[in-house]
Image (cartoon, rainbow, N blue to C red; front, top):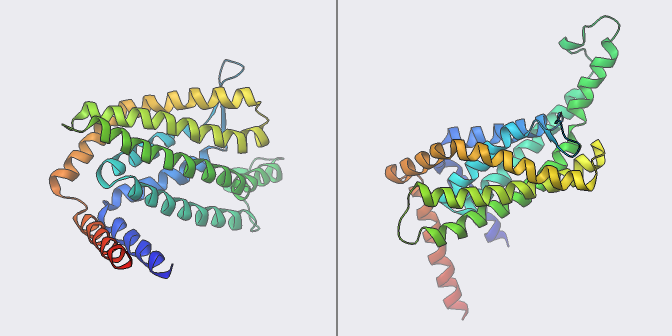
Length: 259
């Protein structure tokens, strides 16, 4: 058990060194922003359609997972997701603490409404824990679905060649399924409880939200493909791949000794 935890810790350290730092930073920022923006609903001109502002960021999260999965594998993408979620929890705790500190927000200086506005701003941040909980459960579930579905589709369509077409197939399918799962779980935990959405609205919003997020993926997928192509060309992640190979050899040797 201790050895397994130690290996996972070492793998995580090497992985975070291997993935370009800008990608890791942008990924974590996108997840934090997604959770904050989920506090605001955007009404649409149809009874059963409603989205939250997190939709304008969540596509970047899934695009990053698709890129990392294609180059490093689904395990690596899932580890990165867990690291990002842990970071997001610490940020949420910081917001929670700051939201309960005495003080006045700059935007609350409206004559006659200072207390109401200041309380609303405090509650938006300090009350964000419920959004974070729902989003964390939803995202972790969808991340596993997206990463491994992307991987297995890739194994099926990229047996002979790798090009933008095969990248698009694995990314579009996994993104829609993963986004639908993310939206549905989040809607059932948060939107149904907090905003009063019906179960029908939750399902419809999950499907339409996933479709909207898929459009973002389609638009920006050429960038994702270009990134993975450059990573392959430049040998990005060589240290991580060596670690994985050595771990596999060690596991095989240990298995032979036991058997």
